[in-house]
Length: 301
Image 1 (cartoon, rainbow, N blue to C red):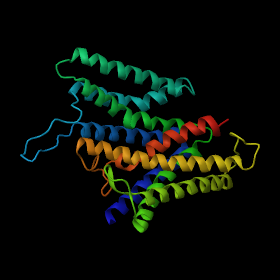
Image 2: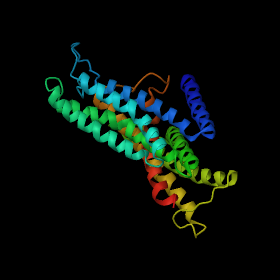
Image 3: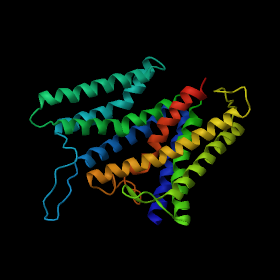
Image 4: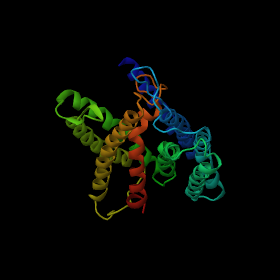
């Protein structure tokens, strides 16, 4: 528990440090996202290639038998993803997402071409695994880059990086106190329904509180959906907190089922007490995707 607490504090310190770097230039936050992408991709490729041991000592086939060429394609995709976004943004402001789309099309095309050029080693199952490793976490992380460049990017990122830890923490605390029926015993036996409810309630409250504090500490004025009504922003941010907290729980369960399918306990060992980077940001990835979409469609008008 002590090791987990220290690691958690250091992780929060890194996030806060990059928020300060955003004051120098917003793009400096991309360094953090790039690190998440590269480390998370390595963890996913390693997980998909993991071979479980049978009782007789023999090794099973990996869940996704990625050929060497497929792994190379995944790593190249992850290595280029963030730099391509900022390069296109530099050359054509607000068009960075087009660079990501084109790179993703090329990645998919490369994986299909490898089925021909390296047909002896590349399987359809490996191609699917490579696509999964490219999409999760790199593509989902792109929503953090996109949110970072929104007019209200600071508020969007605060919600992304606060709601998920709040939902996780209070799901654990409430679940430990009230216990009760298991949420998904076949996927994550330690999670309870009471904990999930607690995480959602406190996650919703955290979103509303963040909005209120942000309006007090900045000159931010809500101009989104229903801005002519005083109650509209409170409703919007309560809804953001509610759904983002639910998605945080779902993201955690999604990673749990991935780990169960491939036969590993943690995605990595980088964060003592927590596991790997993906064990730390699994719920954040799902919340980030939703928060960005809502900000783009309803908050930034």
